[in-house]
Image 1 (cartoon, one colour):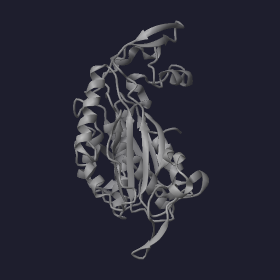
Image 2 (spheres, one colour):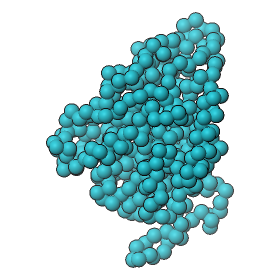
Image 3 (cartoon, helix red, strand yellow):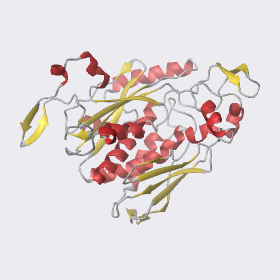
Image 4 (spheres, helix red, strand yellow):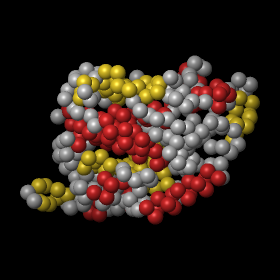
Length: 359
């Protein structure tokens, strides 16, 4: 059950990091959605590994093969199923992990839950590799949302101690943010991006890693989408966001910054603008009571430093019940944040499209 999300559009992810293929089944897509395959390929490439010194050296083409659900690149109402071959695996790098768990990874709790039957190669089903089919499903939903005038875009907000310029949360267009997806390194200010890359390079030289924050904005969502209490937009986006490995926190609007403000400083005044009800500012991040207000939906996710680092670490032998040392082998990102930007966009699109279909 842990690999399925969605109510009106159900997304089911399958496969493991080093299995023959990974993939996704999407059930509930309305018929008649035309999919731009070139746009989908560009989106998938943004997440794909092996794109520079700041990413893993594992190279995967990530070109999906559609098995069902499409007729001439248009949804036909049947469940859509797509697979992505794994073509560059090195499972021998992970042979010792059933005995010696990696710090920061799911190796130990997976051993307790699955009693040694789990696939440890590349992290198995816990791997960030599984975000590839999530991105595939997410971009299909992004294309469907775009036809309704709804856009999703994100950027690297922070890596280590280097912070990019934040978005203007009250801007209904976010033109600068839309341009970020065309960049090799997804930041608003290129100078900050260069500083981030230098910080990543230094962490890699130190046999270490860095974490960061991704900021995402959804524009064009009309007021009135969502539900109160346990089925609000924040609830649903948060549930999907934590499906991205390494996500450890999420905030909407001012988020944790609210605690340093008074109500008079944090509230957003309403006003009429060109015949529409809007808020003068957008500290609430486009959501009140779990329901959209018509302002841009703004949220940020915090991502931990990559757990697989090259320096020697302390661990245990689960078989012999003794302390031991571990050096992690394999190919890993010194910072996962740049490749996670389209993943965050994908989960935002999946969630909002699913909730819009509820209306």
